[in-house]
Length: 295
Image (cartoon, rainbow, N blue to C red):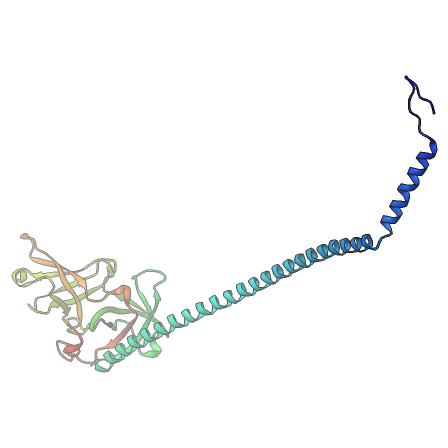
């Protein structure tokens, strides 16, 4: 084949056919080998193994999470039950402590009741006068128990006896007691040491002092702060020798014919729970009850 300047090299078409056949032959040979088939299967197995492993890990995570949530709910329920049980135990313990304290107070009142020389009716405070006519206490004993109008009421507190007041109204099962601090209350009284007499009156409230009036002015040099004032028994309502209060202030005026003294009540009315309604059949003496039970 002659060539010349300016002419291009031309290939025979059969050359293209031959090249195409050779490529197809090598391709068929390559894809038909066992090595390729095995590698393809291994690749597919690895791929699906990875997917299966991921699914397994995901399901395990979900299972563990669900189990944790269930265990947490169980723990919360058990905690609530234990907390409730502890609360009940604490309440039982408080109730037991209150019962022990109540038993101690009742034994104390029982001991005092046994040494009283008067016919007496033990009673418990259950309320206040709803009409507030006398700032009265309501006690759980009435006519059927022997309580009656004008009967004196005493109590035992902190190892000593003291006057509380008197019955001003007796119902069948309950009674009203007018306390010493009521404005209508007055008790014939005397200073336990100097023996000067007077009249002790209330000033309207449990936190206010009592006022002992009509004390002879000659008692001025014989009255001391802290002296006990007791009932004198004059008038027949209150027995003699029942503690009323201690002198906390001495009131003296030159132009007055008598003097006065303020008293701190011997009874803490804010802690009053149990009382004794007494009937004085006869005056047992100036002390009324044994020396070791009161001041």
